Length: 90
Image: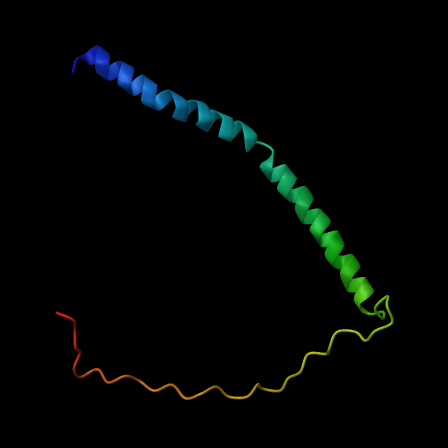
């Protein structure tokens, strides 16, 4: 291949990546500002939910159960496999 052909191939392969990369970088410029705004809204929502948690549910039902400190029932005993002989498929 000649130098001209190589240059054309490189241009054809690299141009879409460069264009898409530039577009991606431009679209990410305001991401940090948007993220801060989203975090602020989430914090306000969490504070509102925490304030409402102390009152009874709107339908008059009972609230969420209180967390317990009891340990859950133990799980089954795990037996270790013997490691002495390993059979492998041939």
